[in-house]
Amino acid sequence: MWRSLRARHQLRKLADRSDQITEGDLLAFVVLRNESTRLPYFLDYYRALGVAHFLVVDNGSTDDSADYLRDQPDVSLWQTSAGYREARFGLDWSTWLQMRYGHGHWCLTVDADELLVYDGIERHDLGDLTARLDHQGLPGFGAMMLDLYPKGALGDQPYAPGQDPLEVLNWFDAGPYRAIRQPPMGNLWLQGGARERVFFATEPERSPTLNKIPLVKWNRRYAYVNSTHSLLPPDLNRLYAGPGGTEPAGVLLHTKFLPEIVSKSATEKQRQQHFHTPQAFDHYYDDLSTAPDLWQEHAQKYKGPAQLCALGLMTELRW
Image (cartoon, rainbow, N blue to C red; front, top):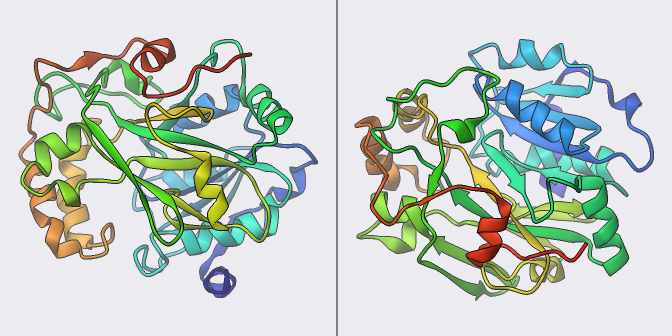
């Protein structure tokens, strides 16, 4: 929290519409860089689910992300050119905004390539979901991050801004996944799936962490520690038990593998901003730059939340 208080000085306001926030509004917090392709669909998706206001930090985009966001009537926008990794991968910035604006609100913290789904989403928006969680006395909602990928080489599928990414990325690995609790905070560590199978088969311990708690009724004394993988105070980490757990949980559909991933990988390798020991993951970006085919014969074609419930990847909610 102290780091976040200091980090607020790195943020420059580009559009402040926070005076529009009213009691009970559901807020979304996003840190991004060069996501202009995703933003039209991303914003509309969460607007339809009931997000009232987006609080966004643009980390030095070189595309038109900042210009696009500045024109959106329900977005407050800050910009910084400070180092993403040095800011705890953006958490110092988003934590400050959550402290300043999120207290008492249900807050959704997601990346621009994450789409939250849950059982009953076709009939119940996030307002219904958070009302249900309030009724149960639950201050948050966990989710597994599920990698979606196309059939065929990455980069071969056309994608237009505003298009549903699931029209391009519609396959996933149903397993295997494994999870353990980690001391001292008791946070889950969930790994497995497509990225581990393709990029980390020989070093599975380095594969991405897939557990997140993206939806929290925020208190200014809360803080994310490692992305949205873990939270303080530690009791909040018990909100999510992973696939097969009984706690209410959803899935974050991870749309990382849109066609632009191939060109972006070379840039991200050069920037060295996304891992604690970035040089150890150079091979990951190198492999992505070759436009591999992630599809395999046991892949499942995505059909919707009911399918994910049946597979045990998220819980069925009793509405």
